[in-house]
Length: 119
Image 1 (tube, rainbow, N blue to C red):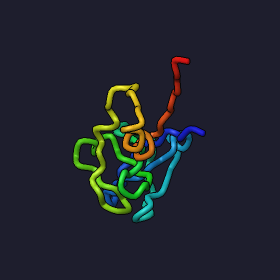
Image 2 (spheres, rainbow, N blue to C red; image 1 turned 45 degrees about the vertical axis):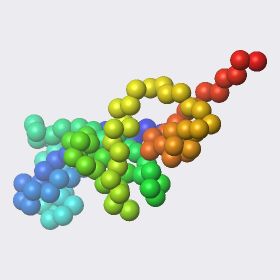
Image 3 (cartoon, helix red, strand yellow; image 1 turned 60 degrees about the horizontal axis):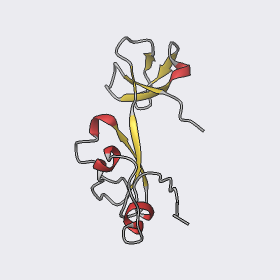
Image 4 (cartoon, rainbow, N blue to C red; image 1 turned 30 degrees about the horizontal axis):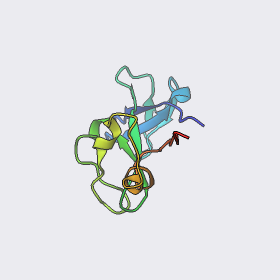
C-alpha cells in the first residue's frame, strides 16, 4: 500500500498548515483548526515530503518532514533524539554476528537481509 501524495495549504485565517490529499486539490476545503474555507488551488501549494523511521530507544514509528531532518528530530513518544544520519547511510552494509543486533534488530529503517554462504 502506498501513501497518497499530500499537499500543505496554509489557512488564510489562522495560518495553520493543513494536509490536503492530491485527489482533493482544486476543491474547497475547511481548515482543521478554525474551520474557515480555503481554496486548494493556491499556487504556493507544495507536496509534503517526509521520511519514516523507527526510534531506536522505544521502537515507535516517526514521520519526519524533509525540512526537519537536519534540525535534531525527536521521537514523538519518548522524546529521544532520532539518528537521521541513518537515512542517508550508504547501502548495502555488511552484517555479521557481532553487529546484527545494532544494524538489523535496532535499525530505525526497514531492513532487507540477503543471506549468503560459500558452501
